[in-house]
Length: 71
Image (cartoon, rainbow, N blue to C red; front, side):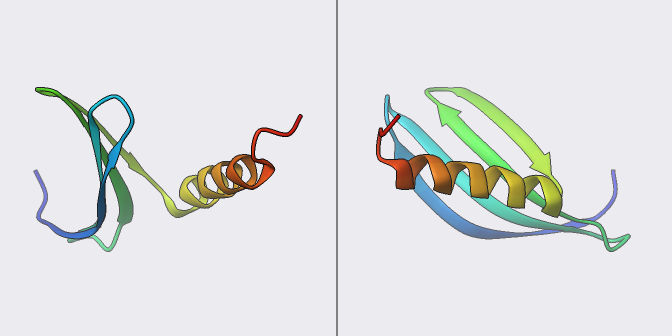
């Protein structure tokens, strides 16, 4: 496994007793990823995504939150 530097960006509680952690992951090769860790009891879901995916995902979530349930 390659060396990586991990910096925590945010950690917060989510509905249904979940905890979300966002981390900046920088690999020795220069690759930079956003790691999303969702803890649900003893179960973890971990995703590493690139900048383009993070931007698209973030925009979609911001648009959804801004709509406030309006259809």
